[in-house]
Image (cartoon, rainbow, N blue to C red):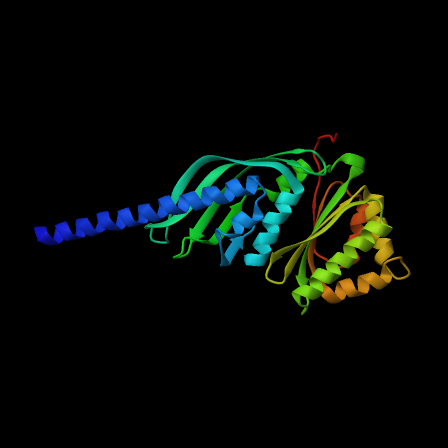
Length: 283
């Protein structure tokens, strides 16, 4: 009996040591990924990431994304922000569903950066986790933070009574190349025809899912866009292909649109959420 207990104890010790060794190795990789993010070294980051990665996004209604979308997300952050820096509150070992150490890595901490367009400073607290494959590459990664708060912090929401819309779209039986080409074309048309649209950016946010961020100088600019895509408008012929490429799942407006604006949107029958501003200023 004593011999059996000794063997059980030894196996637990050895198992714990093995998990701890994996964690120590994987911890170096996780820290390196964040360090390279601050250096905007995307190619270096790619060497740490499995082609089978699944990334969980902090966007309501989004699905886990794969390798290409995750890489594009990293690239997007690096294009939008300067002086990116992560300060960890703590790094922790993770466990499997049974509470057993499995070599995964967890961290709570704070990202700081400066938005490259508005010059506003980011001060973002959150939680991130990393799971690894047998080769020590990151095979699953998750972000948990207030994405709406981040947008409020770095964009000039209150300037000119600005309106921001985050539209969640589903791709309609189109190839990646077709979607990429259309997005490139459509944003150029917006930029050419609508000077009071401050931002128009497409992001991949899940399998066959697109997140579109629109920023309008004010409500009038948003209504002008609706007029342009309506019958007889400047972009009537462009909006037809938009509908062929995408289904609009829902819209989320940040700002203070009037009842008239909401009534206009209601006429389209699209699920729409509104988040009103409380106070603040823009510089």
